[in-house]
Structure formats: C-alpha cells, structure tokens
Image (cartoon, rainbow, N blue to C red; front, side):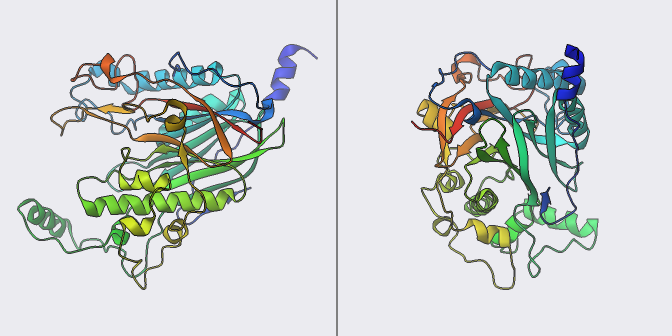
Length: 392
C-alpha cells in the first residue's frame, strides 16, 4: 500500500449539521513567537492546545462599519484566506492535539471552514444564533479526528425564553420607531428586570466531550459568544445571568470530566460577569432580584450555583490577563475600543502548561485598529497549552 493510499485511509469523512431551531441538541494565524516552554511531565495522550478566535463576521465588517481601516484589509475573501492560514499555522505550530473555538462565524464562513478542515481530518460543529437585523452567526468547535473520539456534543440556547415575560413584537414598525424616538428624546422606558432582558438574547453555545485516542482520558470543551451589552448596572446584571447560565450548562454537560470554556465573553477583567466566571462572586451578589415567578429559564437556574470554579489560562500562565484582545474602531465610535474580552477558562482538573504570548499595547499607536495587514480580525487569536490526567 503506497503513502497516498495510507493517507486517504487515515482521513475520515465528517458530517456537519446545523443547529435545531430551538431547544438543546445532543449528538450522537500564525501564533506569536515567544510562548512559554512546555513541561514534559504530562503523558502525550493528555496534552492539548485550545485556541479561541473571534473571526469577525464578514457581514459586519464593511468599509461603512469600519471606515478607519484600510479598505483593502477588510475585503472578505482576503480576510478569510488569512484567517484560514492563521488557523492552519496555529495547528501546525503545536506538537499537541488542537481544539479550535471560533466565534462570529456566519453561515457562509461555516461552510468554508468545514470544506477547509474536513479534508485535513477535522470535525466541525456549528451553533448559529438566529438574528433579526442580519444573517445568523454563531460559534464553531473544530478538532482532529485522529487525536479525539467524539463522545457527546451539545448545541443549546443558553438562556431559554420565558413564557410569561417574553417580549411581544411591536404592532408595527411605526410603533417601534415611536418607541425608539421616545428613548432618544428622554422618554421613560418601562422598567424591566435582568432576567427578562437576558431571555431576549438567543445566543447559543456549543460543547463537545472528547476522548483522547492515545490515553482514553476525556475532556469537555465548550465555546460561547456572550451578548454585547454595556453601559448600565442593569446590563451588567444581564451579562452576569448569561455568564452564570453558560457556566452552569457547560459544567452540567461536562459532568465529572475536566472542562474548558473559551470564547468572546464581552466583559473586561474585574467586571461582575468576569468575577462570576472565576468563582469569586455568586450570581445572587450581582442580581439581587430572584427569577420572576411564572417565567421558567432552566438554563439560567442551572448556572446560578456553580459546582466548581473556573480559572483563566492567561491569568495563570502569565500572571495577568492580556493587555488587550480586541482593537476595533467602528463608525459610531470616536476612537478605537481596546480591551480584553476573550478568555480561555479551565476547571480544577486541568493544568495550565503555558499560554502563547500576545502583542503588547506599546506596539501600536493610539489610532491603530484591526483588521489590518497583520490582523485579519478585530480580535486576537488566543492559545493555551493544557494537560489533563497527569501528575505535577
């Protein structure tokens, strides 16, 4: 049997299936140089790398929405080519099995990603979130079939809509326009609670329970893209509800297996939702109002009492979170937004062996923004080397 024949036998056909319309579904970049040296104490079957990357939805990346970026650098085909090259190099740079966690993937790019990775022996799960203002986008998990067996998977809306407090659609666009005008002109909006607002956001997460072929050790990897809600204490509470819900769902799905939760959480270090994810505060300390009677949100209830803390791989690997993971200058902003929104969180059963270095803020001028010739998304690619089932 020749080498080509053996290679063809090694590559397994993959299946890509879309999310269900609602409810849970259970299945049955060049890396920056200078990353920390990895320990050699872990067995080869229990080392792995997790990459998280918000690829910037091409439907949202236009010369109108990003007028301060070079138009040539926001071309959709060019950006996709560079993103695929970056992901390929991220995989090739690691001697360990790599799991990719991707956010802001629209349906067209989900197909392109699947077509790119399937011939290379990788499986892809896509969990799109339906939106009303633009095409669906969501999150992806990608892993090597030669390194992992898939034991189970889940795609689920993180905060389920309630029956009694679900928002009713406006009777007409004119009613909606009058409501917006009243808000802009200082009109009084009706009081709402954080649970009701949280239930209005249909964001979905994806999780996979994987078994290392070499060692038999299992690990659960989940990814999520939190809503982008800022500017008030009420919205901070909404973000805390989503953080508690996704952490609770991921822990429940993982069961007794080690857990990694990675993605774009849209909160900065020290924010209430970030502190909740790391286990330093409980949801009841952030959201004093109990779940309203008559409105059942099982996923949020599951996340209200976390069973284990999560640790940030970058905080543990470098002693601090990255200086920034996003550098974005949108049309409605007076200056670039520079902050840390992306994280790789790990449970107590996972050892952080290293985290890849990221660019420092001093490398950029105040007016620099992504996408650029160096960065095809407005977010940076994060990567952490982890180990499970091994002694110190």
